[in-house]
Image 1 (cartoon, one colour):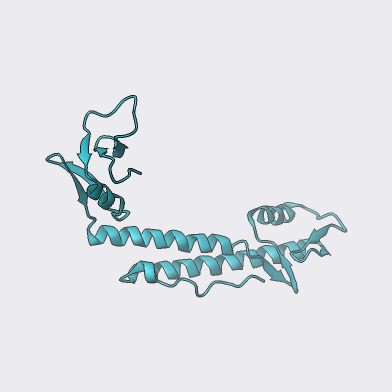
Image 2 (cartoon, helix red, strand yellow):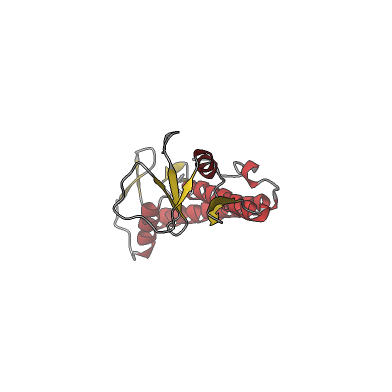
Length: 183
């Protein structure tokens, strides 16, 4: 970042600042000089605000309220989806034992269900580190519990999305409720 005495330059073609104290091999042909105040204002602009050049001067184009709202909604939706995806890995409880629900475990449960016969005496590791005998009935029960978990998680995420989209300030929307607890 340029110090107070350094001159900054900006190229609209590149969309980038070029400090004068750096010797660049090639520079764009549309450089304009930018004061320290203009540079600071440009760096402090919002994430949806853009920069342009008009009559040789740097201009900050402030986003409309609707663009800012859409940006904020998308940002919060990404956070809701992150919680949703994390909750899918929280595990499920079947017959008092906790089983993993991450992607690799889900694939293994599907594999067990596809087998015509599960080998007798197959030991399955639970989330507490203990082992239990696996059979078709238990594999199906775990698979059904994982499916129910998914339904609850995805439904809650969509409920939060709908409520957040109605919120006047999506950044203040609290989406922490309704998620299943880890077993």
